[in-house]
Amino acid sequence: MAAAHARAGDDFDALIARFDPSALRVPHDRALVRLVGGDGAECDVIVRANGARRAAGRSYARPDAVLSAGTQTWAKLGRDLSTGMAAYRSGHLRIKGSLHIGVGFLAATAAAPEATRLRMLQTKTRLGTVSTLVAGAGPPVLMLHGLGATKASFLPTVAALAPRHRCIAIDLPGFGDSDKPLFASYNPAFFARWITALLDSMDIDRADVIGHSMGGRAAIELGLRHPDRVDRLALMMPSLAWRRNREWAALLRLVRPELGMLQITPRPVVERFMDWLIPEGENHWVATAKDEFLRSFLTPSGRAAFYAAGRHIYLEAPEGPHGFWPRLRELSVRSMFIWGRQDRLVPRAFRRHVAEMVPAARHVELNCGHVPQLEAPRELHEAIERFLG
Figure 1 (cartoon, rainbow, N blue to C red):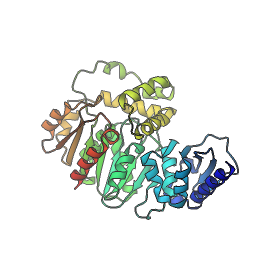
Figure 2: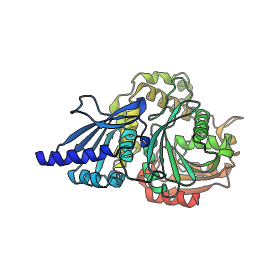
Figure 3: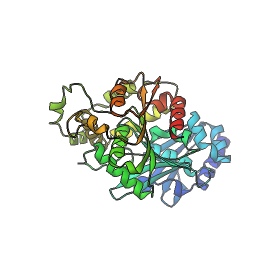
Figure 4: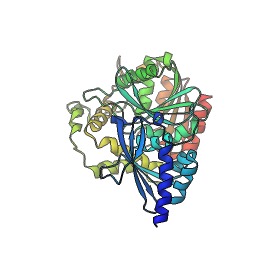
């Protein structure tokens, strides 16, 4: 056992020695990563802006991320660090806690070319800090997640598109590791302002945009307000204004989302909702998506942002001079709408209304629920690749 622990320690040290701080920007400039081997070996790593070092012993502080793998996997990582993300995608290496820090640690210890390597960054804009996952080279593709999710929900999409595109998955403000202004509106116009500020900070004039659910609605708003910044929109089950009667609208208008600073909803209820939204399957990405949701939702500012954004989705006016559907007629950006045949949140019946307002848009139906990048990744990414050309 002592020999096995020594070998694991050598493998851990090999990773730490090759850590590149430019690939990982940690929030608050410090993070604790715990590496766990299948033989019980452990190593705590302190990550700072200028590098990483092994802690003197086991820290009793709660780690920001825990990376667990078997002895053989750690040995492979020690010899060939380019296998790190492959081991994670295959499920041979597990990450608990912050995906930003856990995946970022893998990226920072990988032997990938500088131009295409995966990086976890904190990007400062004129409005605030946006957490980004960047990988690949080529035409830029911006990825906007759904309500309660984070940029980690696009890890399968980044893996699929990075060989031909510069992928930029972001935590929208209010979610993940991005800033969470307390009294912000968290409506599509708010998100569109932050997205344009991010594009400016990254010196990107135009980009293709992939938006999922709430992120799809934010992408539509970006296309309506700033069509000069968008080449194409791939909209995965975008949240659209309800056309039927909203029986709780009057009551919900009286409720302030800042009440989310208090934990009103018991955690088991939240977990059951996630199980209903994303049914369990063999894909380990599902557990990852649920962990990321809970990590953000269980913070006071994250809950306030979640409730504010969800409140707007429910209350958005469908008709009238500033209503969603009349405005949708003005969408001139080339667009593809993706619908799930088993989607419980955004029914594909919306397709008929979208086709009426945007006749030039493409439509794709997939045999999945609300999260196609987890439930039908191959079909989704083939459709997106065809659309992006």
